[in-house]
Length: 277
Ligand code: ZN
Image (cartoon, rainbow, N blue to C red):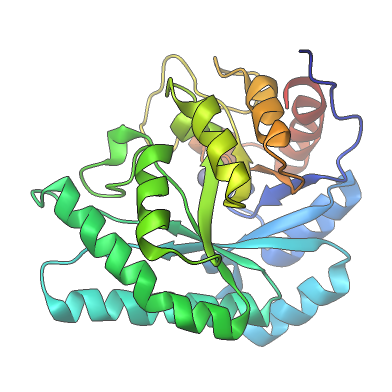
């Protein structure tokens, strides 16, 4: 089955971290000028002008606010740490509600040395503790499995299956999964897990970038679509076959691209989106 290319950027959203040197104002103006339809806001983009001004700028922008990034980091060595994590996630839910983001993306966390299953138990408990508040504020929560290279300290959730198991444990229609091709492209069960998540209405977000074959940094050397080896369009086909109709979100952490003129980078993002997503 061949997946048709996307001919415009109306279903494209860009994460503010992708154009990290830009202020929220510059992101809004740059994305709008490029014809991008949506924006996912990282919390550090809110800080300089404050939440209220950010919310006003976004409301006036014409862009659809897709998600707030990010909450999570639930595991901790003691009760106080776990409670602080839940409190911070409630704050993220408040921020999302204020900027009219329907979703908070969760980087679930891990503690070096803590058994991964114990961390996953704490993640499930932390998410469950946030669900009543998320429901009250009308903000959903998306578990984003991260590539296993981050299992030591960023996410004990590395696969769709592990995310599914946590969704099953929490058992709320407010909890689903963010599929990021960078983290999940290698998983032999990916197509099947995407289909299963779609059936359970748990496909909440779809993130794209590329996996460069020779990465100089495990965090900040992600590729623009087409710079690496991921068949992004094939995975978009799986996500759409599973019923997902949301935004294709461009999320790229890259010192190399951040060092460039961001306007030129934006032009390249638009071209890469049409060619590779
Ligand atoms: Zn992502």
